[in-house]
Length: 361
Ligand SMILES: Nc1ncnc2c1ncn2[C@@H]1O[C@H](COP(=O)(O)OP(=O)(O)OP(=O)(O)O)[C@@H](O)[C@H]1O
Ligand SMILES: [Mg+2]
Image (cartoon, rainbow, N blue to C red; front, side, top):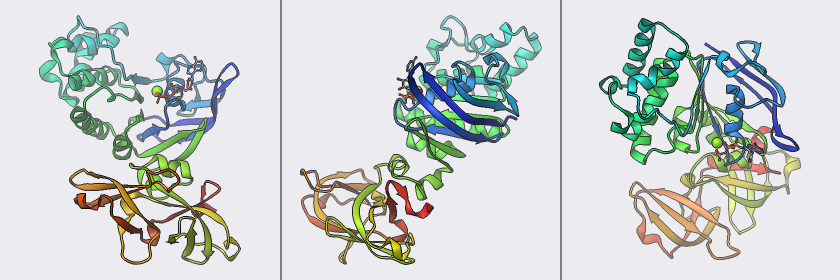
């Protein structure tokens, strides 16, 4: 069991600020996922929590104890890296028990810990094999097993699946979800670039951007109620469409006249003084539908990507035209070069002013 608290945590390398004023409370048993663009400081934050990187500002506490200056080995944390080098000349069992031998645990304790971890990870049949006789996914599980045997309070994973192929990623992702379920009181922090991993594994997602936290929330909170345009476009794939316009009618439902001629109605309420406000409407590709009525966008389909279960329509690849992507269920290969109108239900139309969601005023 471990609660983690980050208060004003910062990191700079000399003059260069990497992270500023990170405030985050993580409850025991949560699985927190860090996402954000490459170079935004995800690994740095993880390494600071592990004690592998010095914290240059603020405080980190684990179960109420300030650990800024505590050495990594005493923090009760185990970290699984993207490049998990296993010892090639040692069997799976020897790889997994290595840290416990160093810690001079008894043979009985070591065997119990390794056997239990092997069972959780379904590695029991492979304990006497060398790493070279394992698949990539099995090797990755051994790397996770090395963390489990140490029975840490907190697990840190830095993109643990990124060098697996697509099918193995899915299988290993499900294993990690099951692993978490088998250890409900263990706290996990997981860094990934993969939208699906973030959405499916996280109890809460932390979106990092611009040296700080852009938003923290459950996966569905971030998807349904993004606080700003950055999170709106970062969560979800293909990303949310943004179109510029002006508020022409306020009230429980807001009407926006769009620069490109369409009209959008949003269930985000506005006040009379918002009349004339310049806003961006946001609508996810999967929330757009073809319509015969007045829509929020009319354009020519430039590219069709038929993926089988869904079809992606791309608009506005010619210079100056607004770029839009729609995702329709089913197959619509015949729409290429046709002129269509897109609409969306008011509940699916987000409103942003100066980059911030109008829902959150
Ligand atoms: N020793 C260092 N000196 C100066 N800057 C550094 C140093 N180490 C890392 N950085 C900078 O810190 C920033 C954050 O790096 P970090 O590795 O945490 O990013 P990340 O979010 O994990 O990226 P990725 O998704 O590519 O793994 C980067 O801009 C990097 O250039
Ligand atoms: Mg990284």
